Length: 142
Image (cartoon, rainbow, N blue to C red):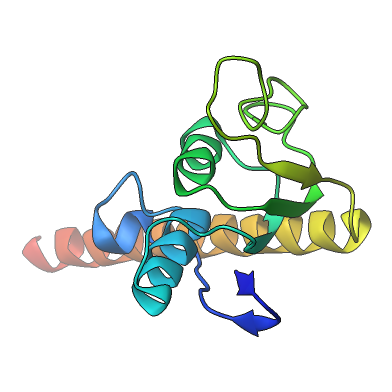
C-alpha cells in the first residue's frame, strides 16, 4: 500500500497461521496502512497486489476508500475487480475504487503457480513423513 509515494502497508496471506479467514494479504496491508496513517480512510492510497482481489478484500477497499488497486493476474474463480464481478465500482456503492489489472501478469501468475506448487510439495512430504512414522510405530509394536 502506497500513500503519497511512501509504503504505508504491506501484507501476505496469514489465514492458516493466524486461524483467521480474513487474514488475506490485502486485508493485512489495509490494517497496517490504517494504523500508520491513523485513519481507516485511505484516500489517495494505491494498493498493489499479485492477484485480483476477492469479494471480501474488494469490499474492504471500498470501505477504506482507497484510491486505486493495481493487480497482476486475474482471478477467474472469485475475482471482484471485473473478472467474475465488480465490487469496486458499481452504482450501489458510496465510493468507487479505480483499478488496473494485468500489470506484470505473467510474472505474477508464475509467482503464484510456484507458490502453490511448493505448498503441494510440502503437504505431500508432510503426509509421507506421517505415514513413515506410523509405519515405524506399527512395526515396533510387533
